[in-house]
Length: 271
Image (cartoon, rainbow, N blue to C red; front, side, top):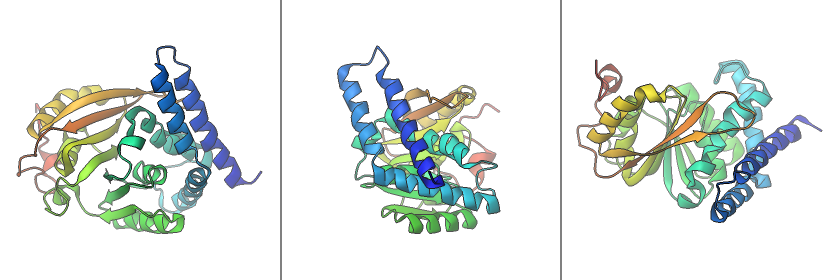
């Protein structure tokens, strides 16, 4: 079996194992089990797993040159990055809800999770936002090689984008994985969202220390915390969480503040 086939099998098995893990939970209602089964089928489409496997190989090769994600072999990329980006889709229920909608991955880096979500949400347009030219060049070339039609790398700062009338309050969902503390991340994210749009933020267990200041920031930006999902991912150690914030009204025009200020003077900070 060649390397590509091994990667495809690992991705496919990871999706199947996780779906089975969820379906085995006794408290699940039949309707929820049917939703999980439908998600599994849509995510585990052969064309999608093929593209995901191709992305793993591209990322592995380019990571040797540019250290995009830190030291990682192909199998670690599958579990620590691909499945870690995919599994929250089961919790967020976003495959059906956001088909054909517009999203943006803030601080996308190597395309995680935005490029992954774009592969499994081909009907949606997903922008990959990063301020670093080398990262955006990598993303542009990867999107071209994989022929991901509605995936759009974009070089810009979130603070500037949020004040640009062509982009402000345009998006149905915002993604962010390992970017910044919660209050800073919300200032980047909520001004980009349409009313009723969602910010879906990937966090580790340290998010609890950020919640109080995050709640204060969300209130200022006309958003609120909708739900916290604890992500149970077979084969991965460590606690993982997905925080969902919904936008209830227009963000005040002064947010986001100019480049660098959200980090220098975070909203809701007690210091």
